[in-house]
Amino acid sequence: MQYQLSDEEQELYDRVAEFADTVVAPAAYEYDTKRRLPLEIIAQMGEMGLFGLPFPVEVGGQGKSYFQLCLAVEALGRVDQSIGVTLEAGVGLGVMPIYRHGTPEQQAEYLPDLVAGRALAGFGLTEARAGSDAGATQTTAVLDGDEWVINGSKQFITNSGTPITRYVTVTAVTGERTAPDGTVKKELSTIIVPNGTPGFTVEEGYDKVGWHTSDTHPLTFRDVRVPAANLLGARGRGYANFLQTLDEGRVAFAALAAGAAQGCLEEALRYAKERVVFGSPIGANQHIAFKIARMQARVHQARLAWHDAARKLDAGRPFKLEASIAKMVAGEAAMDNARDATQVFGGYGFMNENPVARHYRDSKILEIGEGTTEVQLMVITRELGLAG
Image (cartoon, rainbow, N blue to C red; front, side, top):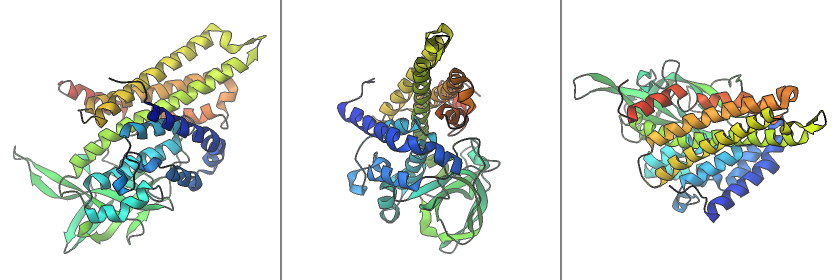
């Protein structure tokens, strides 16, 4: 497995990291307090080609790899997880389903603006009783002539209510199917619901612990009618298609978490060298130095884990196990590094204007989103052939 970046990959990382340091970081506290997604920054990211990184030039993309997308997500996550996850979800949950499963007509309508960053899209899976257990989905879609009639609700949906959100892809029960063993199971399909469709309501955004800049809303569907042609992919393949989307998303999510862990390390290391107490920098104290050494080790482990998963993904090799390992390891690294960085800063680390305070609030979701740590453990044990 190759862990050394190519010259092209290093150039991309450096370019995005410079953008993160000079454009994103100076504005992060302001937008965090306003709890508003900075569309001007998103537009600049679009102009840089970040939303089109893993897509062919034929559809307006950059023709790069999924690994390179993850590099960009990590570089942004160092300074602002909200901006990093906007890119991660914008590509993985917004563009990728249309690119992978959309008809030529759907792709022609939506891909140009999505890959250019001029538009965003959400993926409506999670419900009050259905998330990791997607089979418990309650939202329904009934075919009435040449239209789907959708009823139900979704929650925690990223990029669903911005001024540039074009649509949300919704998972819904479209019927029942009899499995080979004779059991009757729900038939899940995915359907494109454009924002502004009558009956489709984007509810008020959540009051979240962190990720204040990221756009997240509950959604309500009351007799929402969309054309039958808005079915995304084959009928009844919604669950299978979602699993593929989720596996890929966990790799990019791990890169985001590695970036957050790296950002905490950088801030703690800088402060440990600058802050003088009793005539010496606090980094000269072994208990501080050892804490930062552990932070470095976590970053290293998290980065190697997502690199491994992303390289296998790009090579067309199985990567489900590696994706879950990366997501779990990197999420825990981000949370642990945020806690330790806050401790290094002391009282100042408890002030919201300090980047480590924002990472402390933001990082907990990295152990929850895209499948909790417990779900990753479940996936890993299954991949190892263990029951449960």
